[in-house]
Image (cartoon, rainbow over all chains, first blue to last red; front, top):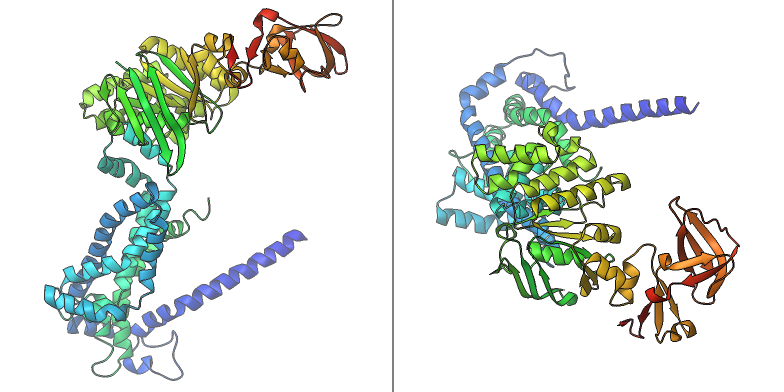
Length: 276
Length: 334
């Protein structure tokens, strides 16, 4: 009897999970479907779901009109570069907070997190002026720096949590064994924290990839990443849903694929320490 | 090689003084055991010597040179941790080789030394395994292997056997003692287990609240404890303490008598009482005797075939020449 109940429960839970999953995924699915429609079908009322004339025309037009590869390269460099730089700064920072905490460490961590509560637009003006002064407007380097800085609190927080899980005695053993601080971090801490570092990197790449506020405001033609690519289809000559959808699909495809292959790592990383 | 001198070494954590100024000399080649109840500062003292904690005040000399502010890596000391602290992502071979790699030795020399250490410690068949695939005793041996390959000035052991089960602990105790016999390198060993201290040490340092209560060979501590604390800490079962008129007879505030120095019989003796619990170990029997009018309970150690039971009336005769006398401050009266 109990068995039957638990089976039914499980069925309900499964159905619910699928429903929620589909609900969340639906906008993305709709975008992808729309990208294969003609402009007419894209705004048809009532909307057509699967039975329309599938076409690749939108992709051809988007490809012809703008240089997808350049935007893609910019995205890769900006997301990858800001993440790499963030890890280089974040690992030593998290190391010191996790293993040689001072009385203020907790406060510093909270303060870093609090910077994420500031609306980005609040500092747009000063940063824009700084960028003009430094000649960083519409440069990849400028975006790498800004995205690194805005994601740094998250990087340090995540690494800090992972490092906290590593027994201090192992690092002390390395010190006794003659390892300098750099070697201790390189040979012992980093390899032991690889799962945590990997999920930090993944999450940060995704955040940087999707970041739109700064990338749109600080770039023009040269350094624009895929977010700028999408945006360029949203306004000028009115809305062309099918082409906008095609551009969006092309922009999110790389990160979707990356996320798909690394979801195990991501889930493990995000729940690290929560379940043991 | 391996003479360590502590000169007025002091450690404070904030306002809390865990180790008041302390002097101690550990001679070259000596097996020294720091023993004391938990929280007595013995591990902190070891970590100060290792350099894992900074001393607040005082000097630490290793082989005549001032090591007080040297980094742990520069002190030529090797340490074995309670948790073994093996590198989980490295094979046994790489674990043992790590200190040699850090010292910048050549590949051939590293291999030679690791193979040598592995054969000494019976680890040859396990060199390619990860620590996670080893038993507790094997992990312990890897940790020791990692320490011996460096040929350090001294070994530091921080309660290395407390994570092992009882049978394995006895075996490892012997192995460490044998290792010391063979290497003759200075060893400092921290434990809360007085049996380990008694069986392994050349010199025992008894600590309480960061203060050295007594330094001496195991038998010195057993035969002539300087105070009540040492008397009660060294020896198992614990020494019996008697206060009041019975102690006054001996001209002392408190007298102490070890369980093995009391004769028990059914008919005659200076003291008498009723057996509360008898513990038969086969080789020995421990009687916990109540209603003696001397102390809550007097522990007596007798031969294994002495068969008193709960409720039996017994007589106790202490061996007068082995009674320890203490004054009101707990200090030994000679």
